[in-house]
Length: 195
Image 1: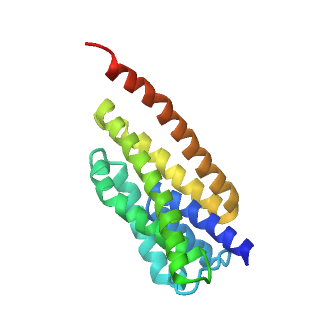
Image 2: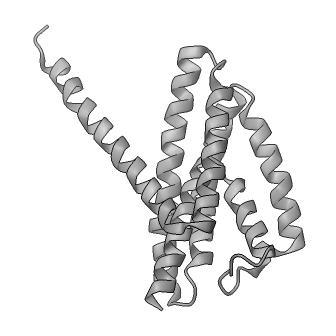
C-alpha cells in the first residue's frame, strides 16, 4: 500500500509540475496513458480516460500551445494559467493517490500537487516577463517552445518513470532556490551602501 501511495504521489507531483508549464499537456497525457492501459486512475477520475475528455483536452491543448506562441497574449494568459495550473495540479495528484481518507487525499493533492504547479508557473511567468521586457516579446516564442518541451518531457517522465520526474523537479527547485538566495545578499549590500 505504501509503495502504491509513494508511486502515485511521484506521478502526481511530476504531472503537477508539468501543469506549471502548460495546464492541458499533462492532463492530455494522463487521458492518453489511461486509454492505452498504462495508467490506472483513482476512483472518481475515470472520466479523464473517456472519449469526451480526450477530445476536449486535445482541443484545449492545441489552443493553449498555439496561444503561448503569440507575444503579449502569452503574458495575458499567465493571469489565467496560474490558478488553472494549481487546480489542474491538485486534480491530477488527487487522481493518482488512490484510496485514502478524503481529507488526507485532498490535503496532499493541494499541498504537493498545487504547490508544485504554482512554483513552476511562477518561475515561467518571471522568465516570460523578463523575455518580454528585454526583447519586446520577440524572444517569447523561444520561451514558449522551452515550456512546451518541459511540459511534454516532465509528463512523459511522470507517466513512465515517476521517481525520475520528482528528482528532476526537486533538483530544479533546489537549483533555483540556491540561485535566488545567492543573488539576495548582493541586493541587500547595494541597498545598505551609503549614498
